[in-house]
Image 1 (cartoon, rainbow, N blue to C red):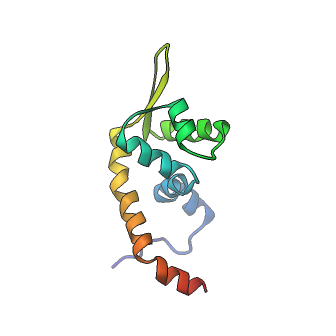
Image 2 (cartoon, one colour; image 1 turned 120 degrees about the horizontal axis):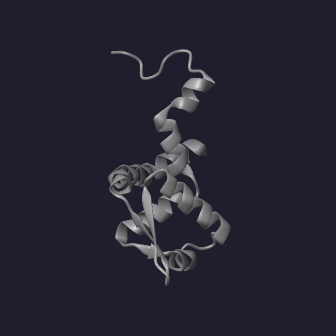
Length: 116
């Protein structure tokens, strides 16, 4: 079996890794929460602002722009409002995020004990 990583692992290897890039994104404080909300239905900006407390409007805007730039969400604008929705790419990421969350919940006691 070949190793998962080339050895030695360099900074360039880490920075160019597609998995590292997406793990950074889903590891951000608000990204997963926003993706989970948009899994239910599209939201307007002001709806998200009211729903996701205590995120600032600046951070919410930055997070939405980044998720949109990655192709995980779409933004549509009408004269009345801006709406955000999951794209097919974003929807395809959800089962993996859910699986990670389920794993974390299942092993929370073990992780807590190890940290203690």
